[in-house]
Length: 114
Image (tube, rainbow, N blue to C red; front, side, top):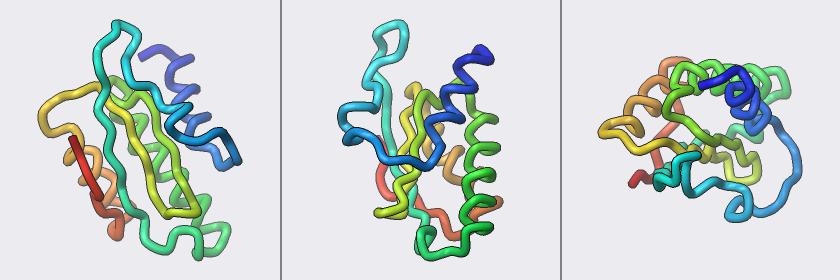
């Protein structure tokens, strides 16, 4: 993944109001291959103090950057306390990423996977 793609991933993790997810999430990679999606529940994240919220976001960023060859899109939804992740399909990638997130965010829970 190029430096520009890494920066795109990090920008997608920023907190902001945006269009509905279905309008922004990529469904295919640059080669036309279908992407997979999954969600991770981050219980009570929106209720945490601001410094804990920022630390959690940093932990998510650091974890996902380690999977930059697989992760195409990621977004935290504070209203729903969810992390949405779109990846290039690979057996086990959903569980690998979730397990890596749980190292620094033990309460993170996989909601669904494809």
